[in-house]
Length: 119
Image (cartoon, rainbow, N blue to C red; front, side, top):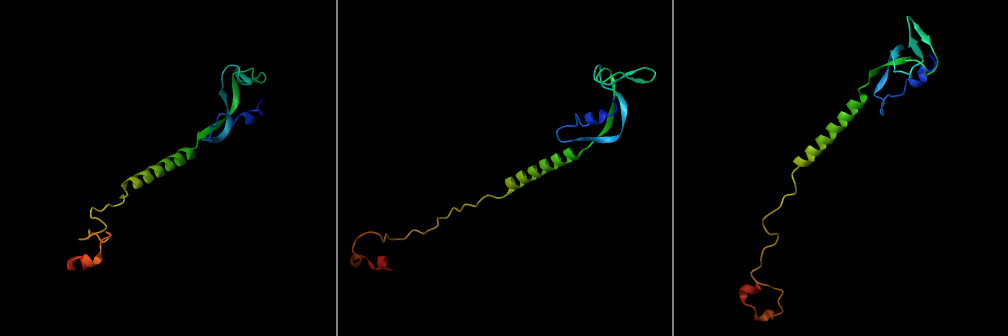
């Protein structure tokens, strides 16, 4: 009956609750065999599920899901753009060490070195 409509009012609200009740329930066509009333000059209660009309709570759209989802999407996009625009590590083309004129790691006798090699 009319009291049972409140229990079914939350059905079909969406996974994230994007619809909220917007006012008092109104008589609406819900399909053959789905409602509790039939249409005459007035509405007549014919039993649970035997009619084509039922009292259904009116709904309005709640855009919170859209705003939150859009905000998260924009945030992710900004992070990706910032990461792509950051400069990478710089590489140098000059060697880190200078080449010595002599290899001092050889096992020859330092006494035999020339004066230029000793300095």
